[in-house]
Image 1 (cartoon, helix red, strand yellow):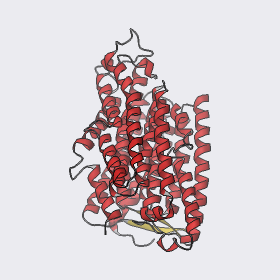
Image 2: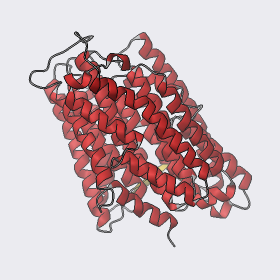
Image 3: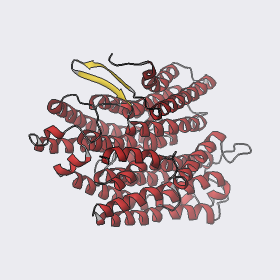
Image 4: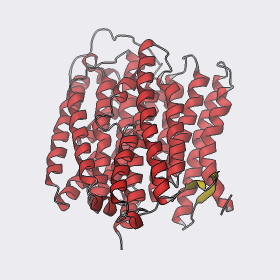
Length: 501
């Protein structure tokens, strides 16, 4: 082990806080529900404490890294740079609230020990992706994420769940194979280099230009599966057969977000955005992102099943991050990177709301949502905040994203991007506003499909607390965007290093 200081136990501690929790839970009997709940919350809470300590140390100027031999000449490396801290903080905060939500959602369900065991391993893989300091380590955790998420997708065990799981596995394993090829090829050219601001390929630009271009295509294809870039997105709507906490995890914390983060890593910390521009690979990536944005929003218009409408919305919204990475300039980079956080907050709130409707009233379709706001006003208020944020209504988080992306596109002379973003906002409004109209303004039915009662609250308190908190964060991230403690403030530090002198 090389270069380990006492404070560096924080990095493995962040991983082990969820990994050990998951391993222990696997061996718990189903009836040990209280112990399982406390273990889940203890692991999630401990991870929050460790990430807070990591943030405090970084603000004090400490450097965190941990390197050990993985294979001869190939190091397994963890580190905490500005990009990784942004993603690991998002994942950790949202995991805590998703854990609380999942405990309430699955209170009377079978196979809870199996579910929460894989749930914890999934988050371990996600935080491992965030803290990876080189491509080999990233690849290891990227594949662990695929393996640990599959059992969550097929958790219900129905024919539809198994079919969705097979499609998920086929897409993600194929993407992982392509990524493996890209990593091996790249390491053959450059060696096992670590992630670095402004990239690591400068010395290869002249002698290996063609190979670097081909490698970029392979990286985008391999990682683009999890990022759900068209036409690699087909698994995502099918995976919506999973329970609502899994859907929230897939869209806001783990799989899709890990794909978007991986693209950011390759563009900024492997290639370097300026090097990638000189290779001519960013314009095709921007076009692919724009196509995905419009395609996902258009498909969402025609989905009556609420979770599928949200799934196609994710296909569209995650590509805002990719688009920001593909446009050269600090403003567009700001918009794309901050959407990594903003989209996570908004989308997890929407899936929490969808889960509440399904679990409390048996409502699964948009056409069944008439008057649901009168029966579940707090859930619907949280859902409405997130939906309006997705549309880009000020002063919510989504408006910040779209403002910076529009400014960045104009500054870069990419005026067509502004048209894409305008069309996307109109489509967002077209598939979200009818939901809000139904929920708040139409009369409720005499009987809900499958109503459940939870005492004085509109639903189980754990199901209610999570979306209220994340909706409040959507408001906070927009209203206080210019404060020194907002996601935007942290992203500005990242961008200053990427484009600074």
